[in-house]
Image (cartoon, rainbow, N blue to C red; front, side):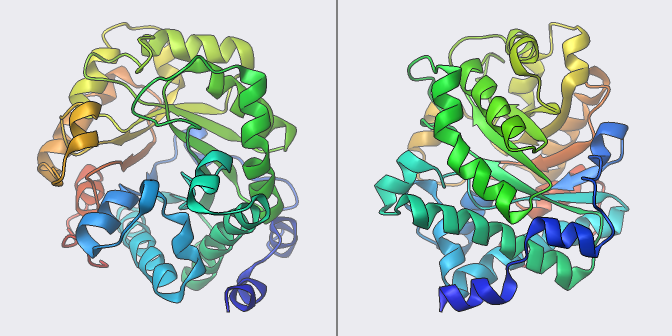
Length: 336
């Protein structure tokens, strides 16, 4: 059944570009200042609003079932609606934050099954792009850290990181994504390796770090230093910060400099809790969507090139709608 769905709905990315007259990869609109809506906290939305069990916080297995695919499509449609209403482009991340080797092993997926799952996740969003007829929609292949994402762990060698992430990046390239985005990185070595792997696959790439309450990466590196270090070794197309409350991100921005202009995207947490507190929490701290939007807006003067805005843990379409001044606020867990 899964195989049949994939055969019906998968399209080769190169073929799609030929059909749409886009032989050359289109420029990323946010790099020229075009506003771009992105999505929110997929996993927390599914777990707390829809009662979905996501072992290891992995959403990609949902692509293999009809009910899971419909849940994902309903989730993504909310953000397309926001973008259309506010006149922005939209960039949607595939549900593949955990669809890499080590996490796949834990979940019982072989290397071949993971490759297929990553390709099928792109096909799901291609299907949605066809459905809504939205040419301004970007499909981003979402990568996650090899490790936990909330703790630094051992220092990561860039070459090892490149080798580890290459199979997932190659699957995205085969499926025809517009770019790849790695979310919730805790150190610079893995970032450098991922950029190198993406460049080898011919894909644009965005790097998103997470920060603790003091504004530093979980390994203690200041955000300013992390960005300048990665730029010197293997510059991505742009940087982001995700999985941190705006009050935490504000601490990272106390050091001004040209590096701030490299931050093009933000995906904030709804909660001001620390990563350690969130990791052990059994409830969902959704905060207040309007207050979160105000806190994030306060960061704009320090981020001159901020163009891509969405949410992370604890957020849903209500929070992202508030960030964009959208007057249509969806209810939690329902399609707009």
